[in-house]
Length: 349
Length: 290
Image 1: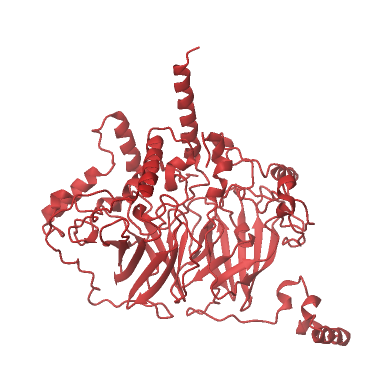
Image 2: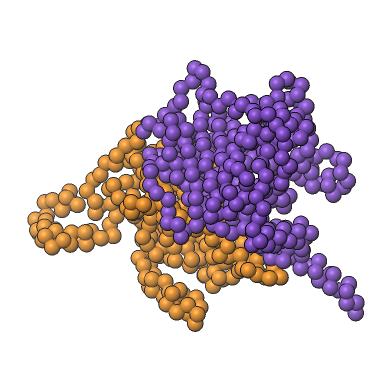
């Protein structure tokens, strides 16, 4: 049967999506927040024990970028059908898809990714926003805080590892980073759409909301019974989540992230990083998911993104990553072979 | 207990005597549900027994599902008693596993190579080594009796079982008709209620999982029917019928008790074991490890 080990290119994409890029500050007029009000003539369904009912399977794929592109600066929401078509077409073109204009190797890579592309990844959000970021109003990640010397060194080491990996010369399994090692992928909050496997199944029981993320098969169990976090000395790859209901909104705060490289979103400092997620069901078919991240050691101000989750009839399948991680061995063996070849060239017999 | 013993005065007398001395539980040890008075579980809104909670098996079956004496583990020169495996009474009903002759030989070979991982060739990748040793998903029913808790999340719709080991999960699809669409390590689970029992039919299981560390195994034809029956607010009776015509001469059964974890703050923690195996699995292909 088909194994789910198609992540060579996708892993690189995950890294790109997961890392904030340094941006130049833009002048932009304050934008109103997109409407997130509940639909008229629709009543929030409740579980038998009275919590807002979020259960079901949801997909968060969209082509709307996290940050507003320069071409639509100042336009937080598009108003005409023509603008929407043009924006969506441009975004779809820029994804790594089959388009036969990059030369043989690039074309093959793109065609490979095309096969895995979630078609919902080609549509902008229904509310026609030009960025997932809703605060700051310019739709951009706020300027970064200069790193301390120690974090600068860690970043340099990480960048060197990524370069080795991209050059086909990973020294060890560490160079592939978290996704390639199948430790965490899109199961680490906050949740951003990527090329595929954008599916989440929410389960609820009295005192719990559980989010089963397709990639990598981890269930994020969120107690909503008011209990405190686990002890400060215990850290986890996915952190430790606690939820509460504010009206019909599930508010989740996650702490106790491990300090390993690549675990905390945006390479923020786990000591000062704060993540707050909000899940609000706004109609039968949509949950508005917002997340706010703050870390005074990483960003000059907190920022917030909103991503609609759309109800789907699709099924979640098991994403067995580590079990058939043939690519890890292939990549490492390839690197050793290249090194051997290079050494033989340097020292001719 | 009451029904069986009524009308046999000498036994009633004995039962009363042991009860006085607090030994009543011993008189029926090992006989499963019979040791509990009949029990009707609290109901969820849809009228089915409420199985929500964090549960755990307390057996040594992950080492060996059959009866076993205490024995030394691997590398006693390094590990001493740390690696020893405790004795345990098996969870196989009748203790015998009806292997076909070739399969019994294969089981012994599995055991001999349980600590051998060789990833150098794709086509023999999964041939040796206990999947647990390599941090692979444990399959069904092994996930149930590994020495880790698991949580049943039963609300509206499907039921989720989340296991602490390897952050494995499994969706019990209620009233799902049709075959498993794809093979998976944790299989494809279809649930239904039979009175107070949640019956889960599991197919689409990958051939590579084992039943325990001694190499008890199956093929891709494995079909498991699990039965979860509440015995008390704190206990579930778990039964699994194992059917695999490629490996066994007839179906056989496992039976064990699951215990509710009662700690007020109990929650599944992470046992993401990939980092514990990378040196073993990928170290041979790395220039530097760690």
